[in-house]
Length: 382
Image 1 (cartoon, rainbow, N blue to C red):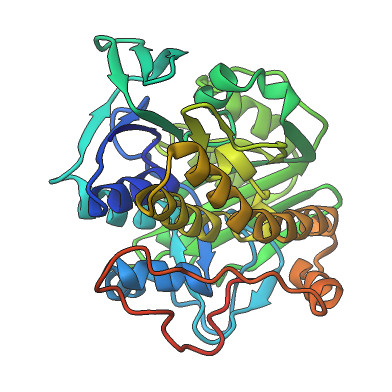
Image 2 (cartoon, one colour):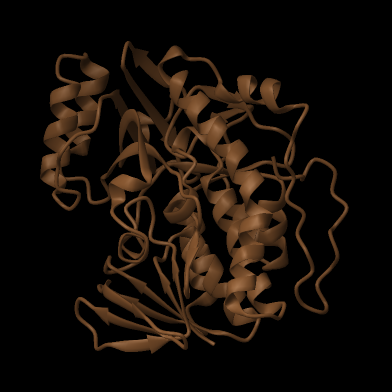
């Protein structure tokens, strides 16, 4: 099968890897001119690490991992510090996406600087037009293009039907390493606002995150200067430490500005189009599970397609495997968001409320020669 994958983030690149592994021909399209830089740290645990291990990428990911002593941010941007459990891995989101891209770029066609414009499904294929490239036909289309997924809008309906705003906006950008040297990932808070600076592994640069509480805002997602103005206005008058961060934010090449939100859908597939990662089930950054969900979802989706049967059966099996796992992480994301500005580690509450009903994802062996579930206590995905 020829499969179009939309998005080169963690979910898209991981899906391209597993599709190619199983003998499919994936093409990945990305509206950005390259793999997107920037973003904060993301936590990997449980069977997300097993997926990387099965890709022979775990050692490389561990080499890129952050070393924060006993604490690290609880979410993909910044949140109250929480204790890292044995076996967990904290890694910058763009380091992880870059690692997956490098592992696939020689065997997978990547099309940068373009995006899907229309989708037209038939019984046999999907006809896709692009903003720039020529029209093409694919057997399947997989949307891994994030919270504001164009694939989702085209195949399922408008953004507003599925995205639930949780009342926080975040700006993430690179700053000189000296600003993170003493921060150790800890956050600064005042009512309705928070800031954190995280040192990267080489110490030369750091990542800053500024958060503020707000209802939904109207703004141009592609207007970086407008994003700078919004953040600067919210943090005006907050003192020297914040002023230094705002100065670094102006002109930052990797500024990322986004709402803390969740995606809630009754179904993740429609005909020959399927969604994964944040496009299908964003759990909100405060869950700390976005990258883990992306890796596990990509492994299961590709494996179910390779397991036999038609695509509709494979999509339904993928959804059954992932539903409970996603539901618990979305619960964690909502709790984490509610407690974000209180300085309370959100997963303490989550662990307390779900300890009696953990939903585990067990990785099937979808191809000969893969090790069966490796016995590794503490690596159950939760």
